[in-house]
Amino acid sequence: MELKKCTRCYTNVCVNGRWFHHDHLTDTAFMLNGSDPINVKLPDVPTTENELVDMLHEHT
Image 1 (cartoon, rainbow, N blue to C red):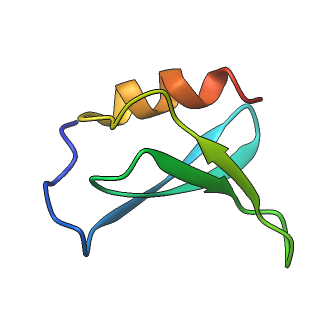
Image 2 (tube, rainbow, N blue to C red):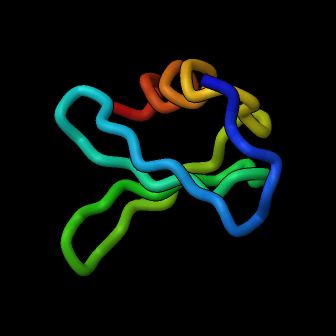
């Protein structure tokens, strides 16, 4: 699925049992980890949900 090109949009995905939050049009995400989120720098700005999941697989 293509990610909307809107800064107000976001996607939450589960990768290997861990939930990540990604704000569209950014190259960052963070793992939802209670009150202490873990920030992830992505190698590029993902344009699809599959790209996002592939990039996050490297961090799980």
